Image (tube, rainbow, N blue to C red; front, side, top):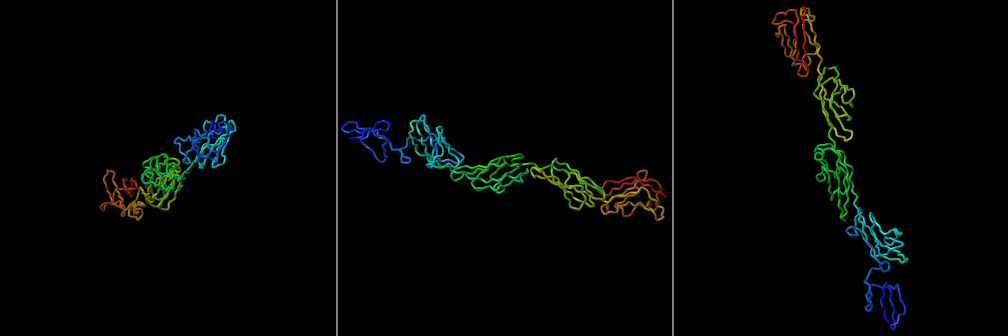
Amino acid sequence: MFLKLLPKGLFLLLVSSLPVRAISDLTIFPEYSFPDIENPLPAVSKPSGTLADFQIINKHPSGKTTICADDKIVLAAPNTYPGAKDYRWKRNGFTIINGPNETEYTISGSGSGVYTLEITDANNNVRFSDPVNVTVNQLTVIQFDPIPAFCGGSVNKRDLIILCNVQPATGGTFSGVGMSGSIFDPAISGNGTFPVTYTYTAPNGCVSTKTQDAHVSSYPRVLLGNNLNIFRGDTVQLKSITPPGMIYEWTYDRASPISNKNAAEPFVAPVENTVFKLKVTNPASGCFAEETVTVFVNTKLVVVNTFTPNSDGINDAWLIEGLDADEYRNCEVTIYNRWGDSIFYSVGYRTPFTGIINGERLPATTYFYVIKPNLKVPVVSGYLTIIR
């Protein structure tokens, strides 16, 4: 008696060269061999104690079974069983999906496990696959806080590792316009919006990225012009050239009445020399610029155009109210006769003009005067009449 291997897994038991019966579904263990069987089967794996009927097709371009969470593996059934009634995919022995059209299963995210496929063929026979062991490595979660707005200029370059609380802080690289290592320099990027990407490769080889936008704005332009001179008691408007839609804030180094410290061009009435500073802020970016202007406050001059030097003790000298103030201590006063000759000249006006020159009284007539108070106050000129 001996066994003879027939097609389709049937065996024929021969006794005295007479066929007795066909025996199917014999369990063959791979560790045993039968030297007198013709064309023996190769050794195969045996999931759950059952002989594997086919191999699952791995459709990943590289054929690998270890991937990162942002990749995917598509497992597919072979075309060996046309008309199959059911495809049952299992992970770690538990069914995850089945149906007559489930010829493929996609693995991604957190899909690590041992995958098998059971196919119920057209004859209701269940066919078993070899297992496929898939490992899905998770990506490192990157912390990269939003980048605060930048103002143009190298003085504002910053280390994004510190500024944006980047984690993992080591082992990653930055890329993007304006980046040098971990330093973002708005002077290199210029104005605009620039994506900055932080890339980190974990020990498992998985690459994680996170991107934030860097917004760079220019400083607002502010121009206040030249310093101003006023007389004490006067009001003056502070003129400015600034972009519209900005936030304005005036500060000053002396107490001073001001119409609106948040206006672009307020009115002020300082009583002493005062430095006014305007801060102009772009509300969208926070970028700001500052400029100052000084308002010099001078004593107001009251110049009369007649006097009566007749030695009666009343109005005998040409008195100029305010010209004795300290800021006018170096003033120049010149009086001319009708022919343009200088008949009186004084630096400072401690001794007023009395209408007497070299001991002689000047004739009662009209004269022309020029007063130069100081470099800040305009020249005052006019006609002066001596009445006797």
